[in-house]
Image (cartoon, rainbow, N blue to C red; front, side, top):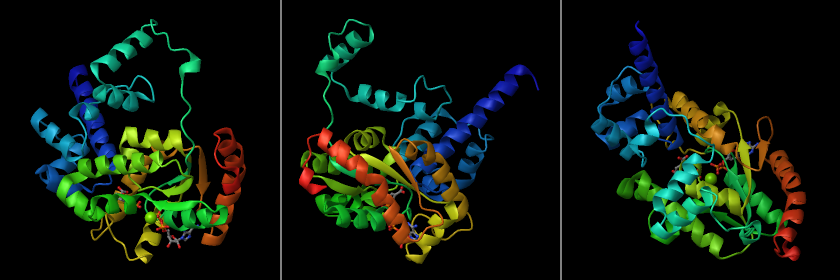
Length: 305
Ligand SMILES: Nc1ncnc2c1ncn2[C@@H]1O[C@H](COP(=O)(O)OP(=O)(O)O)[C@@H](O)[C@H]1O
Ligand SMILES: O=C(O)C1=C[C@@H](OP(=O)(O)O)[C@@H](O)[C@H](O)C1
Ligand SMILES: [Mg+2]
C-alpha cells in the first residue's frame, strides 16, 4: 500500500473508533444510532470498523444523532485533557468573556489567584454505569451520614413532568443532556449537602460532568461488565442492554468509552466481589474522613457529618 493510502486507512480506522467511543459515551446501541440518524445499521457498522468512507453530510447526521459535533469525531490529538470542557465553554462564551479569556491566555490578564472562587461543596456524587450501585449504595450512605439522598434522574423527571424514556423519545439525547444539566444546576444552587446518584451517562456532557467534579466529592462505583449486566437483568430493567445477541458487546463498548471519564472521579470503589452490605461499609469508610475534612474546609455544616 502506498503511504497516502495507508495513512487514509489509518484515518478511517481512527474515525470509526471515535464514532464507536462517542456512541458508547452516549449509551446508544448501533440500532438506536441507526434509527436516530436515519443511516442503516450496516453502514454504521462499516463506518465503525474503518471500512466506510463517510460523506461529510452523513458524518454530521451521525454526530447530531449523538448530540455532538462532526469535529468531535474527526481524529485529532486533543491538546490537553481538559480540551472538551474548554471547547464547550468557549462555544458558549459571550464576546466579553472571550475577550477576557484571550487576555488571560495571552498573558495580559490581571486575574490573580485571589480572584479565583472555590466551588461550593455540596456533598457526594456517585457515578458509574447502570447497575454500579449508585442508587442502592447512595441511599445507604445518605442514611448513615444523615444527608439528603437525591436521584438526579428523578429530579429531571419531576422538573419536566416526563419520564426519562419519554424525554429521550421526545427531545433526543441532546434534550435529555440539557435537562440533566439544568436539574443539576438547580440542585447545586440549593446549597444543601446531599448524596447524589447521577445517571450513568452524565460523563457524556463535558460541562455537566465538570460541574459534578467541581462541586461534589465524586466516587466512581466500579464493577465488571458481567456484573453490570447481571445486576441490571436481575432488576428486570433491560434498557439499553435489551434483546439482541450484541447486548454484552454494547455494554463493553459503553463501559470502555466511559472508563477514562469515570476515572476522573476523586475516588474509586471497586464493588466487584462484594455484597451490598460490605460495599456500603466500604463506601462509608472511604467517604467519611474526606467529608469531615472537606465539608469543614468548605464551610459546610459540621452537625450534618
Ligand atoms: N457490591 C454491590 N454493590 C452495589 N450493588 C450491588 C452489589 N452487589 C449486588 N448489587 C445489586 O446490584 C444492583 C445495583 O443497582 P442500582 O443501585 O440500581 O445501580 P445504579 O443506580 O448504579 O444503576 C442492586 O440490585 C444491588 O442489590
Ligand atoms: O447510561 C446511560 O446512558 C443512562 C443511564 C440512566 O441512568 P442510570 O444509570 O441511573 O440508570 C439515564 O440517565 C439514561 O437512561 C441514560
Ligand atoms: Mg440508579
